[in-house]
Image 1 (cartoon, rainbow, N blue to C red):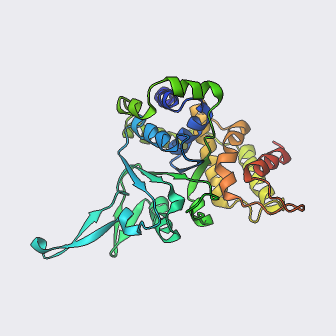
Image 2 (cartoon, one colour):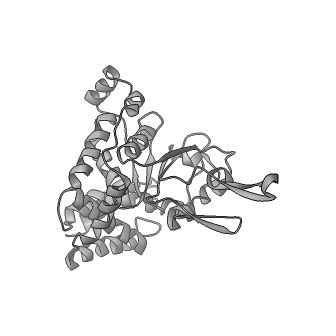
Image 3 (cartoon, helix red, strand yellow):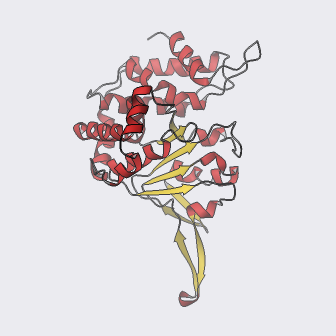
Length: 306
């Protein structure tokens, strides 16, 4: 099973060149059953990463381009009166899929963003008083432009907390960029990409995470990290219990990808920044400059002994 997961990672790395760590973290997020937020400037491969992951995992894929005039019903679906049936008939929206790519999610208004909350948390959609289950598995992979760019709305804390992990691809290194310039078009390569896993195999791999052993000492380490975030004074609010659970689940998935049946502190540290940085809002430093959340999380990690 984990041989197939490694095959998925290798295949995606052939599309997203030079980003092996980020690809592994993204696969860890989906293996843990969480939603993924990819934040970066346009043109670095965020959308291509989502396409490559969904194809390699054999999952049905829908894409929604989030814009300022997008309405919640455009995503969830709408009931339309049909004369032949003498009543309203619900027409499912693009959210009824296994992988939903919410492209440039922070270009939509907060009202539309909030329309995803129930789907991301409960794996269901309620419309016209009727609750409809979403397909299994269900993942949201959202891309986000930097908030300083024109036409963006910042995601509220409640929305950010629904994403298990947040990644940043960054610019490729010189060797990887040269390979992109001289190689085939990445999107054309997607058309010939085979499925390295089936949805059933992915579901079985997710269930097997329950068998990954977590010692009392390891759980205490995760708890200490959460407590330190609440007491450090560097953040407006510390990590919630749900965030601590998310950190532990992501560490289980990372350990599974490493081929181990138990979680080590190194597994927690490997996923600490992508799991926690987007959940922690830094306070301004004394000299008036706010450090990036990622830097503060790394400082938090160093301050808590293993």
